[in-house]
Length: 400
Image (cartoon, rainbow, N blue to C red):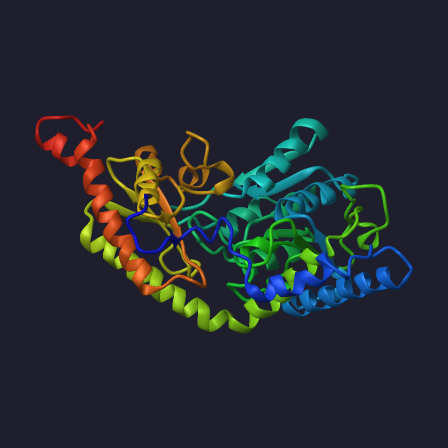
């Protein structure tokens, strides 16, 4: 049973609660406005109008044309559509793809699929200890057979933000489409697709307080892209399937609000994140921060606690009513160390001791302080129990 007076949720990079305004935008399309947007009667026209209004809102947030917005069922689907769709459409140019070792598995597994089953080749860029890609290495990796570069905007585990504008200029100069997974930066950083120089951009509703089951893919006009789902002419022939009108309406409502609140809210969250890190660093020895300290999402803190397992810390926090993560929620059941931290050169024992705290709109200073208190207690208890802990080493044990 939780000891805290209230439950504390610090896992917003995994998902967010649906905000009231997004729920309000959904409800009419779950009740009386239930028409199929492909139908020609009044019910259908009503649904179609809602989708196109949402498309216009998304275009305004992204700085693109409405026709360049494709609604999807998730960020994972949008990533797959971008990677596979471009590779299939541009096989006449070659089958080489460039990506990074720290991408979300929605990108990495899509690339692996193309390599294994469709004869493509891939170059995987490394990162430095802060998790940053070297644009010069990317430029060297592009060949005359490269059909796509895919570099995420900010990492979901560490929050490190990539130099995407610089990467975009390189790709434009070489005539290669650039895809970015912006699922974690949507609503947190400005996303002007023209300025970023991207040809494709992925986003997801449930990271910005809209419901799960809806996302979008920006596709720059003129980008060759094969559809992945067939069976209808929805989304201008790019994604077959009856549209999730309620989810799309909620996504647009949440996107508008996120854009209007962004600067003030991100400044507030950055202050809370820095407070949490200061409390951890001052009160817990042998702790290491993972990710770039400056080029980082305002809401994200990834820390490794030496001598103990991150999963044990998470269980201890959960008993106190505090939710955090050991990395990507999609791989939380894996016993392998984070592929992101491994790519950054974090030692295996530290990677296993990592915890990600991701703050959100509802996070308060009191919650941050309660989390720090619970962490101090949990880490001390777990280290006392650990055969690799500092006390064991001082008693003649061996930390190896």
